[in-house]
Image (tube, rainbow, N blue to C red; front, side, top):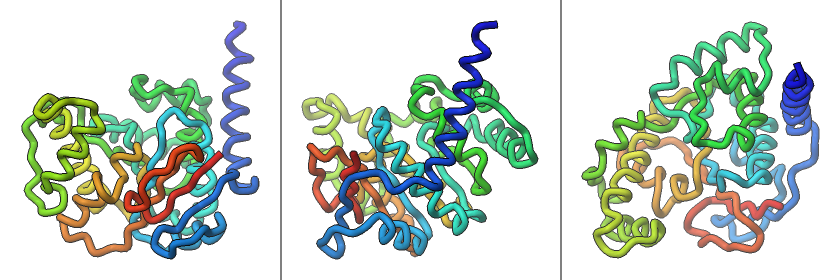
Length: 266
């Protein structure tokens, strides 16, 4: 039974993660407001995000500092988001019923360890659980609904010829830029770009349908105002207030046009 101490440590780590997110000072780093053209304090960022209908946070998936920043923002805004939702790129539509049942169970007082939560949710372990366990455990204990951002994997595989019809998402320059990011020569990444944009289109539709305020955690390319979901929100005519936070490594400088806020988090 040597595994029991490990489970207890994981459970304790998740509890400490949540407590730290609520009570700790903001993660270190500097936040640049691209609209105002100046740096702002973390508390000012929180206030602006509280006023938004849709918030997209772009992360690097295996960066612990990004998950800490996400948890801190979610904790600071928890009260204002109680009737809203949090959409995760790491979840797809096939998991939604299971996730909803587990969250309802936890809301009614159910207790579980991070390891058991993985099993109960049907987590796709292509997303490294050690990178997300504490954050997901934290989210599932909040009142805001945890929702799948992604379409089912089978639908994505069938979307290799998807071409957006909207003016923003369908711009040839967007597809060209995505192709370059994916590292291929002209034509060789067309299918990958189509699947990426199919995901973005679906994420946008899911955000529009989700209880507000709706937050989404996803990779920074998905959340980019120049390349991702915001283009499809625009094409859909969504009129709510949208804010994009790009989490970045202090050593790298994404172009300001990709987000409303760039948080160079340490």
